[in-house]
Image (cartoon, rainbow, N blue to C red; front, top):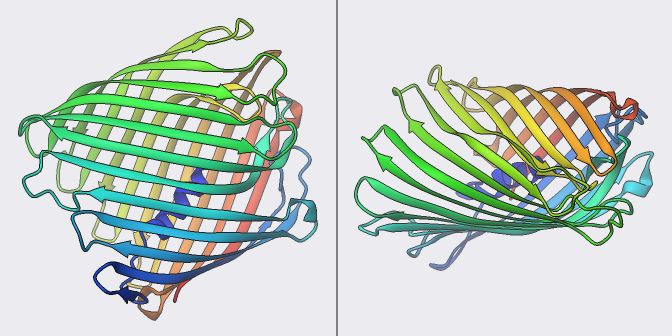
Length: 382
């Protein structure tokens, strides 16, 4: 669900309007977008039931972009119409929106920078229940993120953020979830390529009132050291590693601690090819009132064949341990995908083909599944 949100932000929030914009004086520019797709899947609910279906999506958007003043603004709003060919009870109309404000647009002597990003979005996606059975779940998400940097000296920077996510479930059997995350860190720049620092992150997670059993409400603490190193012109990495602790509000859950880690590596193999790798270990909370610990590793290869054709190939592995009031569950998941983009009309129109495959191995029978999906999309900016 969150991945889909990020994808939408990438497609619309960062989209260039230069080819199809309508200028509004000195205020900015607007454009209309239309994203349509047809997806065939052999496992709609992502569980052992393996129900197949064809899902059609139509998403018209109004996009806005401005960099006329001291701040830059990128925003979009739209409504997605989702239709299931067989399982029509899952049909939905989902609002999509996002706004990003960067101040100042470019540093010109200021000793701070601020970025606000947020949106209200409705999602329809497969979610797992406590017993491993899947279901298409509808949620209404309010996502607000405020990130700032204060440049104490030329070499020392204070980084801080406030990240708020409120997920309201519209499907019986799944709970609301509210999280508030506050990371703070101080980094020192050794040179233009190498920075290092120390930080602390607090996260509170609250499960909604739909849950009558013990709730997986928690307060997380993570202490870490960070390194950002552009080793050469072709490769660099960002690392945060340390210790995390999860304290639960109710005695039905046992407090946990473990490794906190995120690693992102970028390798520019050539002018046309990029390889991105990531590792992470993180606590989480699900809409099914479960605490989770997810250890993941992934790699993605991006290649541009020419000015019109590009492709991305990805592979990831996850180990997920779910803890709930009445027991636990462990999953291992291997996922892969391939997308190919073909751009037309000077980039105004993108045709996209995609295929993905997931293999989930669980100690709960209903959560064992394979899922193969393939689709075609059209992304057009008028």
